Length: 364
Ligand code: DAH
Image (cartoon, rainbow, N blue to C red):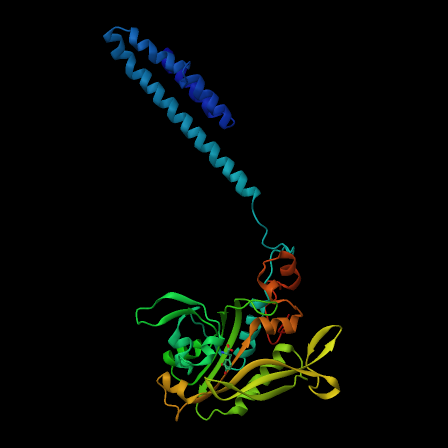
């Protein structure tokens, strides 16, 4: 065996025996580095006669290629082995119990929306949604709130500077009622929906924030009357507050999109500085609290959506989700809902796994 072949055999066996990436690198430097043995051999080519160079050149190059390939192969084998060790150490035992340390929580607004979806699903209502950027036709005009109507000013609307392609003013919806319009225009009756979501009004104090949440309810069918409305709201509020002694009072009111309209009050009493919903209303000094707006959908609104009001009737209601949450879970400042304070969230938040169900308990 010539010198070159001896060097090659020696280097390759050392490389194959290298125990780790550091050893492979040391061998690479000692063979192919600036002062490496193969580098030195390559340098001798310059001092050779042409015949000698023709004989030695290919052998030295082969040596270099063989050693380079051996280094690469050993490095790849070591990397693969290292990955195997790592993967073996990182396996997860799926049979272990869940790590129950608190990691974030479900916001009370999301929780209440889930509770509402569950309660109304049981009565056959689907959940509908609409965009938060609306046009003034769906937010106002179609709901029988004409341009000159004082309700437009009352809503403290955030308008966008530009109109949409149809020349309608664009705004942040001031209530969830435009989802009534969207649903009646896109679905055939009978309709039974709730529409929870964000709404916006330029208003801010302890009980008002510029963004808040409402849920709208809408039923459109044949022969619907106020009795259906009252039963639905009573069933909803009893399930939501999880008590049977809820008392409601329907008070005549006015909304442009309902005729007749009723405001719904719920009876409450004061207990340990906290309002407790339920009790007997006026009896024993209990008081009433205004909770939601409702009524029979105005014939004009039904007609605006392309339906025949002689054939289709229905009722609608709207209620503040944040207000429902405050009443049930005892917060008194609405602004804290949107501060993102971790202490507030961990105190009032809900576990991600405690999904509200009618059978398991609405507030879990
Ligand atoms: N859209 C009303 C508001 O934001 C609430 C409301 C009242 C909705 C009566 C209704 C309703 O659907 O029938 O103040």
